[in-house]
Amino acid sequence: MPEIAPDRRLRVLSTSDLAGIDISLGDVLATVEGAYRTLADGLSDNPRKLTVKPADGHSVSYAMLGRDGTREIVAVKTSYKHGLDKGREEQHYYTTLTLYDDVTGLPVAMMDCSRIGSLRTPAVSALLARECAVPDASTALVIGTGTQGRLALPFLLTALPDLDRLLLSGTHPEGIAAVRAELARHFPGREVEVVGDLRAAARAADVIVATAGAHTPAAVEAAWLKPGATAILVGHGLAPSTLHHADRVIATSAAQMRVTGTDMADADGNLPPVDLELPAIVSGVSKARVTADERVFAYNSGLVVTDIALGHRFAQLALDAGLGTEVALWR
Image (tube, rainbow, N blue to C red; front, side, top):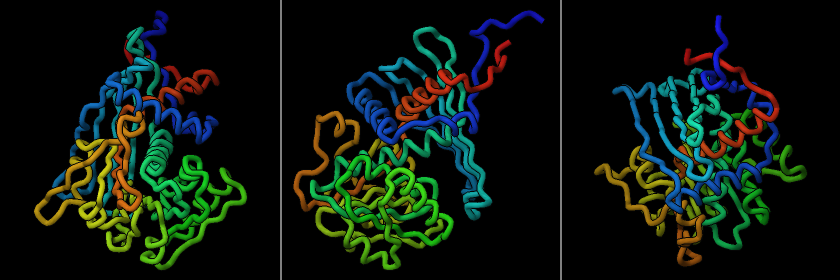
């Protein structure tokens, strides 16, 4: 059989390949923030995601195409979750990211995108917290102990090192233990308080990050928030009132919020307008809040340009380490 030219091979990076790559939280934050700055400068493209969902809602699929103008990388991300009508342990989730070099025209890598997303999302929440929180923010509350909840506090402390009280609302013992383990791994000596009274915890919090799953009974109401509070929605755990009664509404993308934030709509199916998007804030063009007592609602939805930037960073580290398998996909 004749030898296949290198440009006809695709390097595949598996879950286990990426799991062994060491990357700091600061590196992740800087990479994600840089992707937002490039987008704000008009150098990147982040079209609206495509969504497919059956009528009974048992699954959801997304397809996202984008281009990073700094790295000159084009990528396609796919995401498929099955079993939304079941418990977490019965659900199936698959997500991939395929990168192409837009200078050479050659493929860079195809990878499992689950670790990329598990790092990118809490990094974005931390950037939202950094930009939206009041300057003297001292207390953070995380709702949920799943994948996003477990890294929420380490990223928050990386972005807001002056936080001195960390609260956690969760019901799964294994998840609570995992949150504590991640916090101890990244910030030895820091402790998290598990709260039973969500209303009281919300009243005390300067920053709330809601990461819980769809079946959570937790739902923080707007009336529970103190002046100056920032409520960040990643998954579930905030009632629609926190959005509709907010003084300022921030989103990573207003268009994405209209696609994936429909569960926060009012009785007429409407969402309030977005005041600012995160790329404009991190680039320094605009500020998230006008006054210190404004209650800010922030919506964290994934932008593929952040996946591209972080995925490319992982691909570089993986290639340097000789990880991955070359597949003769195009013969």
